Length: 237
Image 1 (cartoon, rainbow, N blue to C red):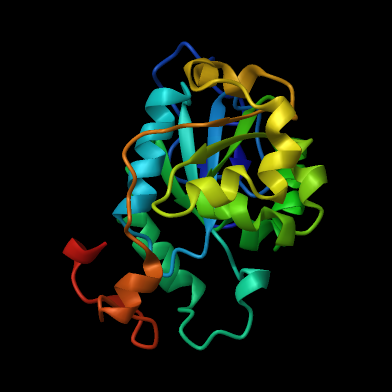
Image 2: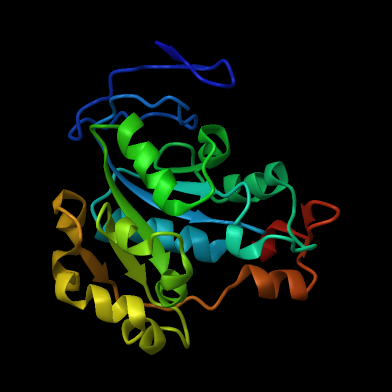
């Protein structure tokens, strides 16, 4: 048994992929030997909302994943200095409203392992969870802005990527710098179920229903008060 930062103990030996029993809500800071296909959905979650949940649920179904981690960033370097950014515990609480604690797990592991950039987070997770197969999950808006991320080419060469459509962003993403760079390694959507088992660079664009919910819109409409640290009502998330 391995102690976590919270003092909770979890089994160090993970169950095989074929067994139904998965690890619970605590992701151990120092890792374990879980042999699972795991989707990583990172972001500010300011607040977490149904759009995040929809991506997680679709990723589980289409990509054949065992878990999706909602990784609440301690601070997005592209959003530094914003006055409307709620504290990490508050944002984590909104993400937990979307999780079930078994297959969809909200976590502050980036804060605990001390990383701020995705490329560093993925590297550390791959080291600490050596038997896991990770897939980075992002919306088309993330792909469009990917060239602004630290060492983004190194990132896409280190982890499989699944891109989900976003209204008004898909053409910009697919024809932008990152989309053009990655074009040669794109696999068709019908092969997306194997993405976790393929060696990067590899990625897929998953066409389908497009969710227009955004954290910015929720805040602008008064559905989340970052200063007070509470959503106006769970129905808005």
